[in-house]
Amino acid sequence: VGTYVIVELAEEGNEGAMYGLLTTITNIPGPFGSMITNVIDANLVVDSDSIQADTHEARNGVMYSYIIAYCFTLTGCLSVILLPPRKAAVAELKQHGGKYPRLAAFIFFVFFVILFTSLTGTFASMFDSTNCFALAGGSGCPPGTSQLYLLGIFIPSALVLIAGMFIKYKYS
Image 1 (spheres, rainbow, N blue to C red):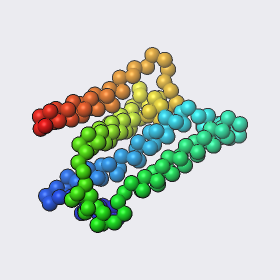
Image 2: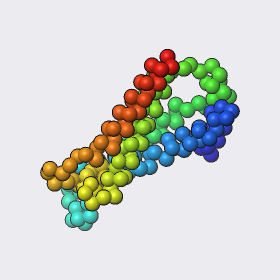
Image 3: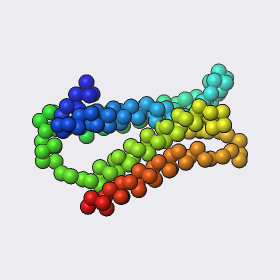
Image 4: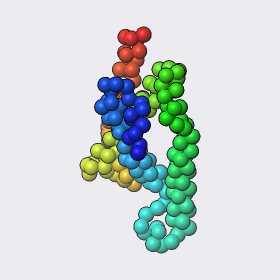
């Protein structure tokens, strides 16, 4: 059902690119949500031993993790309000909608940062030297462990930002 919107949004000849873009954006929340959950849960006392011991800290940690999860789910559900209500509204937006290049560039930049963060967290979880990081789902690494894995987020994000500025100045 979600891919039917591509028919309305895609211009003639751009269907493949639009489908690829929307599919990528649709698939980003899965790994990113898991990674954010790992980062948040690393700060809470939620592990098998604590839950088995049924400690007060474990109960609070589980409570906070559920509150956070439900708040994010509710926020996601409320974002449906931002969507146009009918097919005619989408056509109207395409024909007469304003152009906001700065907002579009910001949204693309945010999606690229989320994509690179998700990729970095996923790759970091695959290697013994980095799977201890909270970003990779670990509970923390010993002091002095290299933080170079973060370059997987910052370098591609900086390149996207530089490319966006280059395109802006080249075509404006």
